[in-house]
Figure 1 (tube, rainbow, N blue to C red):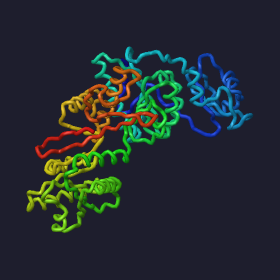
Figure 2 (tube, rainbow, N blue to C red):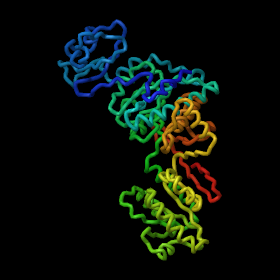
Figure 3 (cartoon, rainbow, N blue to C red):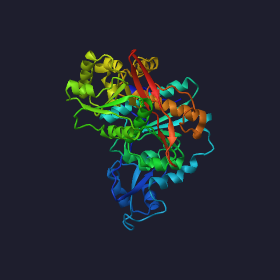
Figure 4 (cartoon, one colour):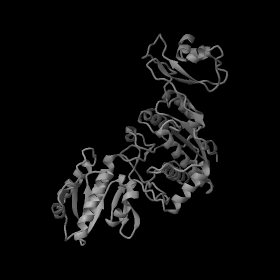
Length: 463
């Protein structure tokens, strides 16, 4: 198994093949990858352009020491004779270039009986936060490949640095890209059009790991989208809330946060409660202690919902609840929160336990689990650094994603669809379960309730 591990030990990540950037404009119709023995004259004739037009599109050719080499990527301009709307039988769009090469990949190969060919197309650099997070994610992918190797599963890894301002199209002309079984990426929505077309042509599985707009999911059956939209998360949270807390008395607390984006959730939940004939109460953080108390039931279990995810208002809410509980200890109170609350455990862990807190989330980072500790130790050994102190842990996310999809391909080949029950991989942080999105690709529908129990135990409830 070829792993791109050791050059990851430096601060600046080097990848197998870097992006060949090109400036998009209306004069460029596509790209050409130089083959052995090709000449500038021959390439210009191939595309029915003049040598002067080819050189103008590729200014590096004007250098005195320029030499055309195999593997170079050249911009191919439109001919001045045909203009920007002209067409040619050898047009340079990615779709036309890759169709000339698709026969090179045999459709009879069975990925279950050979090394899996994995491509990673993400911003792998040290320039900004996107790059640093994706470097960590990629290192998690490599650790998953290493774990699979111990099970006898070989993975051939190729990675490309595809930054936000880079052009992904030249990357797709690389022979290693066309031979991939699965590609993880991209991070940016603007790279989806060409990459979606590419994976469909080559029958490659594409895993979109993070939050980008990908309308191609509706039509491309080769796409897996891990990220769940806020709308999807809200719908699932409301549905699961109604099932778990149908016999509770809901109490909504207005936190006076003008920046909050939780109104869509609380509005949807209140509408559902009203349709089911469930009575709920409204109160505010600014309410007097007596008024605040009147919102709670002494006959039923109460479940409290705030209309903000901020830590400041959460702290005020816990203070009011603690004051109320001093004189009304028999009140049964449960908190229902938001994913952001998982980052507040340093301050509010004891309150989470005390108020039997449920937090809906697509992941759960458990620093005390043996699996988490092993991965964090392995990360230190391999890369001489700690994972970034952010949630979710990107290296563990990369590990979960890669292990899930590579094991799936190994066991089921190209028929793997990520459905529930296909194999029993226990995720370290990020559970995955996919369902078909209409006639298009597959979308992750797995969600958790992270439950902080009064016994100082944390359980994760999967839906």
